[in-house]
Image 1 (cartoon, rainbow, N blue to C red):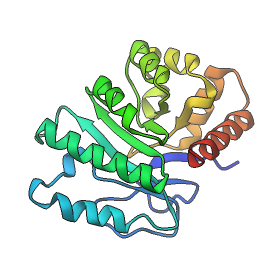
Image 2: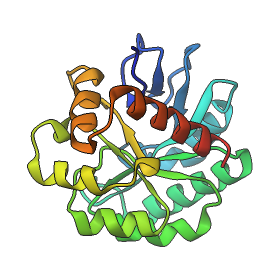
Image 3: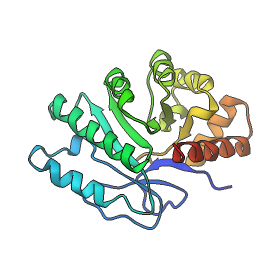
Length: 208
C-alpha cells in the first residue's frame, strides 16, 4: 500500500503534496506554492506575489507554506499583510491553505474569519488545548515525525477527529509508513481505514 504524504520536500515522491520552494518551477506532481514567513523580502513583496500567482497551475493543490512565525526577523505587520494577501489568493482561486505557524496560533485563528477555504496547520506538535481551539475554528491538523516519540502529542492524536487529520514527513528523514503505522495504532483502526479517511479528507478540502 502507498501512503499519502500531505506535506513533503522530496521531489521524487509522487503520492503526496510537494512544497515548492520560493522561485522554483513546479514538477508534474501535486504541489503547494506559497510565501513562507522566513522568505518574505520586504523590497520585493510584489514580485514574490507575482511568482505565486504564476504558480497556480494545473497541479497546484494548495497555497502554502504561508502563515505567521514569531522567530523570524520579519516585522509582524508585514507577515500579517503577506499572509492576508495569500488568503485572498486562496479565496479567489479556491485553493486550501497549508499553514506554517510558530507561536502565533491565536493570531492565525483571528485570520480564519477572512478565509473561505480550508486551512491546515502543518507539522502540529503543540498541546491539547491549542489543538482544541484550532479544531473549534474549523482548522485541520497535519502531524509529522514528533508523533513517533512524543507521548503528549500521541494523546492529542488520539483525540483529534479522523476527518480533521493529515500526516506528513515535512523535511524529516523517515518513512511516511512509520507514521501511518503509529497513528493507526493510536486510533485503533486499520492502515486501510486510515489511508481511506485521509484521502476522503483530501477530497473534502479540495472541494472547499
